[in-house]
Amino acid sequence: MSSEKPQPAKLAIPWRTRLVLTMISAATDLSRRSNGTINRRLLNLLDFKSSPSPNKPIHSIISSDITVNPTRNLWFRLYTPENSGVDGSDTASLPVVVFFHGGGFSFLSAASSSYDVVCRRFARKFPAIVLSVNYRLTPEHRFPCQYDDGLDVLQFLDNDRVRANRLLPPNADLSKCFLVGDSAGANLAHHVAVRACRAGFQNVKVIGLVSIQPYFGGQERTKSELQLVGYPFVTVERTDWCWRVFLPDGSDRDHYAVNVSGPNAENISDLDFPDTMVIVGGFDPLQDWQRRILGLAPQRPKAIGFEDIKSDSCPGDIKDQFYRYLLLEAERRLELELIIKNKSRFVLAQTSSGNKHALEDVLARACCGPKHVEVGHEEYMATQTLLITDDPFRNADIPTRRKLAHLVKSVKDSGGTARIFSSMHVSGGQLALYSGIAAVLRFPLPDLEHIEV
Image (cartoon, rainbow, N blue to C red; front, side, top):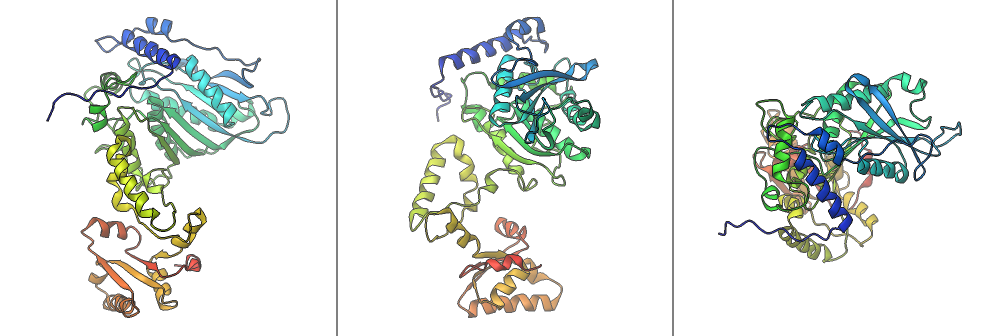
């Protein structure tokens, strides 16, 4: 096997974008010192900044800077669409987006021109009230200062004085608050979301988290880190340096701040974690770490990940052809490897047509839970396949065991099949998550969902 590293594919990047990436990369590399410090004077010369525009809208957006804590220079830039009730007019409420900029926790700010343009566009396109947080940077201020700053901004917004002093426009709806961040800002947004779940806010309700190429990692080197070399801006060498100057002394990259799916990760299974969208860049060396956050979905059942892609419909044998195509593409393309890892979760089902509404027939032909399965079989004789773990057959209660044995025999006698899964096998473990018993029905029984369990 050759030891040569694979050559990166050529990227078709617009020349202006390539120029900006080259300038940012050069600025960060020139300002980083070998002793773990940053030449801020040089960096400030290279980091072009934009001023707020409180009186003259730019592309229909007004912006202003609001101080949260002057002693640590904690502030945010507020972006408000022109028609937001600031003139006393009655307008529809808008969600509040709290945005955290990227930069490896070490570079850039809420005033950086690139982020000023992005947040202004968010406010106009969504539309929304956007707050871009200027948090403290490392190495001058190491972990957990950035997370503290993020939470303090939410606590500031939760205070009734914010509304009383009209620091936000009248139509800002804090009960619809979204945390958004890119790169290190996405890491920050994730950990602030965890803290917000435990904070017990009165006015602020975080209902969504958007992680744009989140800056996560770990001690091991993933496939994408080893293969995706030579691409602009994000490199393993740069990310390692940023982690070193961010983490507490003596910590490695399996610290819970870095590896949110690792052995030291915080347990968030008991939290009402907000709905989450993770955006993964196809040429980002950190993409494998970003995908692993989707593996937290069993702990965070609301997370938008592979587990939430429930179904697609297509008539006849097209489903088999599409499935084969999907697996072939997943083997060919690095960014689709999650499909290979989860191929055992695919279920191919015949639908009456390719219309999405045909999925309702398929979904109505399945049920889970002892009561639903019992009614579906005993009253309608609708069970085609009974799925059950072997745990109930070891129940100490003899009548319970007899009842299940009778159910299995009755299903078989009526022409159905019964599949008993070992609780020691992964399939049995998955079935146990859904009460340990389920059934595939001969025909839809949508009324089953209204039965009280």
